[in-house]
View: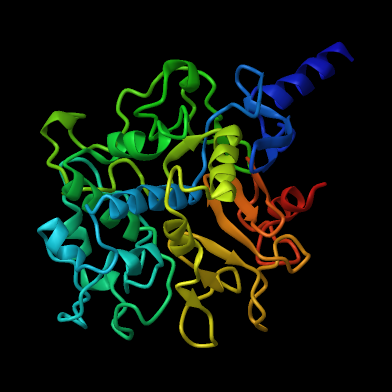
Amino acid sequence: MRLIMVLLLAALVGGGGALAQPAEVRVAFDVRGMTAARASGLADRASGRSVTIDDPVRIASISKLVVALGVMRMVEAGQLDLDRDVSQVLGWRVRNPAYPNVPVTLRQLLSHRSGLIGPEEYRVPLSERLGDVIARPALWDAEHRPGAYFRYANIGFPVIASAMEKASGERFDRLMQRLVLAPLGLDACFNWSTCSDAKIARAVVLYRASGEVALDDLGGKRPDCPVIVKDGCDLAGYRLGENGALFSPQGGLRASMRDLAAIGAMLLRNDGSFLKRESIAELERAAWRYDGSNGDTSNGFYCQYGLAVTVLPTAHDICVDDLFGDFRTRVGHAGEAYGLRSGLWIDRAKGIGVAFFATATAPDSKGVTAFSREEERLAREK
C-alpha cells in the first residue's frame, strides 16, 4: 500500500501524465483593483510548487492587447500614426503582392485586416530579417485588399513591434518596459527579458494535456537567451526594426493574474492618467464586425474586433462567442498556446472584470460556445 501511495504522489507531482494537477488562477477586479482571487494546482510539478496569483505565466495572445497599449502611447506622443503606410516607418516594404499600391497601416495590422496570413511558424530567429519573411507571396491574401477582410494572423504583431522600434529607437522589450509595464507598476516582461530574478523564480511551467512540458521549465533561473537563435545570442549587434518577432509581441508577455488585473482596472478607470479616454475608446471600438462574408471567424470565435481587442458577444447565426453566457458586452482578449488557455475581460457597464488562466488543457477542449470548457468555467465562475 505504501508503495502505491508513493507512486501515486510521484505521478501527481513529478510530471507524469493525466494525474498531474493543472494550474488554475482566477482574479476578479473592479476600478480599484482585485476583489476576489483563487489559485489551485501546481506551477511546477517537478518541485511540487503550488501556483499563486503572483506567478508569471506566458499569457499568449493577451499580449497583443498589451502591445496595443504601447502603440497608443506612441500615437499620443506623435511617434506613430495608425493610418500611415507602415513601410514608411520601417524603411522596408510591407505590401500584399496582389495589391502593390495599397498601403498597409498599423490600424489594419492591429485589427487583423492587413491581408497577412499567419504561417504555421511565425517566429524569426536572431540574425534573420522579418522583411524577408513578409515578402513571401504565400503570406498574403490575394483575394482581398488590405482593410477589407479580417483574418487573425500572429505574424502581424512582429511587424508592429518592428515599427515601434524604428519610431522610438528602442528595442521592443525595453520599450514596452518603459511605456507600459513600469508605469503600471508591473514586474512583467516579454520573453523573461526585463522581469526581476525574484519574478522569474516563480515562473509557471506550461504543460500539455498529456503531461509533458511544453515551455518555460526554467528551474527558477533566467534563460540563457531570451530570443530564438541559430548561431548564438549576440543581441548587441541587433539592428532595430529588422526583426520585431524576437521578443514575441504576439504572445510572449509573462505576467501574473495580479498584473493582468492591474491592466484591467486601469482600462475600467479610464481616467486619462495612462492613456487618453479617446485612445482607449479607439482600442475598444469594433474596427471590424462580421457581416456574413467580410472575414474568417475561426468557427464563430472572432466576430467583432477592435485594435488588439475582442468584443463579445455578437448577434449573428455563425457567431458563438457569448463566453459569459449572459449576452452582456465584454471587451478584452483570449489566449491559447502551449496547453494554456487565458483571458482578460472587462464589463465596462458594470465596472468589473476578470483575468484567468489554466494550464494542461486539451487542444480540442470545447464548451457550448467557440471557447474551451476551461475558459467558460473560469469566466462564469461566481
